[in-house]
Image (tube, rainbow over all chains, first blue to last red; front, side, top):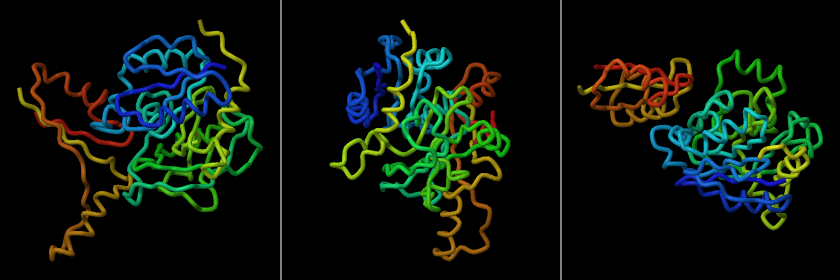
Length: 224
Length: 72
């Protein structure tokens, strides 16, 4: 499994995402100005402040050349994981439903949270047990997931709510305690917590590694 | 021509920035202030004002969470 980690100007979690992916497969960086995805089997859009988060978080990054290729890759069924700012970018790009709003408490949050695996059947969570709790950090200012009520109902009905904040520990006011969602086809996922920062017990938890292990379990797509 | 676009949080979506401002004003002695919302103002020179609607829908605002108003 070859992972491609996208780098925009302002991305800051690219090294951790690359290191996490490299634990379960091969990992390469993908530059925002390039359209070539280097034949990767999965794309990770990592956290940070792409293009300075000017105008709105994720709003400018979606127009980058690499995102055109990522969108095409996702339409062919390629696995795409957006983490934090990457989640915001995928929502702005229309690859995932909904949007991320400023945290209800308006503060930057940086803490370990318990996340419930609501759907363990996705390509991103299949290495997890159903209803498993993962200890993963969040660090964001704009993480309040929002979608209109009819969209939320659809997400629930189609198993697209993949991760939820557990123990009434919703840190940012997200609708339905949503921490991560996938698209209807199930090959694109975004989440606010940072699994790439929880891949080694040295930093308190290795639970985040399960998402990368899940992706590595997926049959390698046949992208040239 | 010079155009201005006002962008606001969509009605019904919690606006914690507006709430924070609303709570701060009484501390300065201003009373009777309600329904505070904080948005953005985008000013731009455009050759073709008929494109403003598409600009707003495509980039300047996210229609899922924001309302916009074009002041040409």
